[in-house]
Amino acid sequence: MKKRDSFLLGVASFALIAFVAYASKQMNTQRKLRKASDEGYETAHDILYPSKTIAAKKLRFGPILPE
View (cartoon, helix red, strand yellow):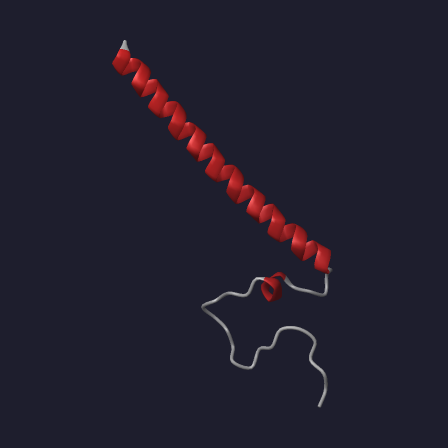
């Protein structure tokens, strides 16, 4: 009886940890999408969250004033 109870406790704890990780990822995704939509249509998602691997040297973020 004890082995079965400990096994069920392990399965339940694994399920709880998996659910918390899934919910955390969903909330983070929703937060990013909400921020992108609050900025407006003129601000692209790749400007708010740039890819760290492909960063052009001449790419500048923010308003650019003519010189």
